[in-house]
Image (cartoon, rainbow, N blue to C red; front, side, top):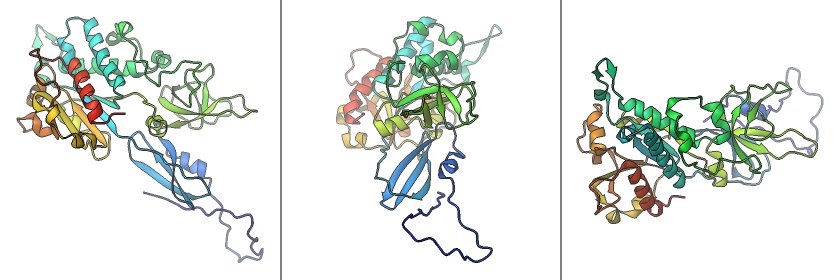
Length: 384
């Protein structure tokens, strides 16, 4: 972790003797703000964390927990940034194939998005639990395999999570989104109206160049674009922290921060991200968080009764994963994945739960299991 220290100038100290040795150059203070902005990518955030009264750590965080730090001496009051735990749900894309019409497929995806928003899920993983065996040729036509259902589910989830004022820019017309108009809106905390006075907003980088040639304009759903300090590619979605305007400034300015910043700094739920996985093994191996998921929960009617589990184990985690099966359960997903030798899906998880024991119906649909499971785990996992 690279760091450098800059000595603070003391105006009260006596000036040094003008007769300095030849060849000895004066040290200049580096432009700290410019140095920190260099190398930042979309979604990076600059956060301040105090370690002692003499030094300040300026931390550059991206959407996950990796960070770079730069130490600068200054007299700043201590501030603390929380790193809140995250919860991920994994859902098989094949559940859309069980719907009877395109309208029902869309509505089913909308139910999953609603459940994720209600229970403040940070990430949704859509995995293929069918495999390539469904992509067979019948009468010179390829049947709908799990991959197509996964893509449709992922696109609808992303569309619903996106604020309404950005959808026309980020989502072109597509058959997968044909019936999304009938879905109930998420009405998530980051879906702001134009008149809302809030410190953070989601935006898209505009093609309109700034007048002075520095930074870029971002459309955040206000009457005028916001000027940010970074030069980013057009049509990139970013999270912007708005800077209060001074009396003599007519232009709204802001800075680009990580998507996790509103949650960590202000406790505001900022929606979920969507990730595609080609198999159940990729759900674990391609985890975006360093160290992976430290609490992996599988759901099945063959699991342990949730009322008999250790609640202390459920409440202690940094990054939790809750995995749901399709029509044929997690056993079918395990059988379709050739990279896993295990025969029992319970071996993949720390806890294998039956969240609805003594059920009256023979089967519980996946979209129903998501609501039931998250409702049961809300208090036990202390989801906030």
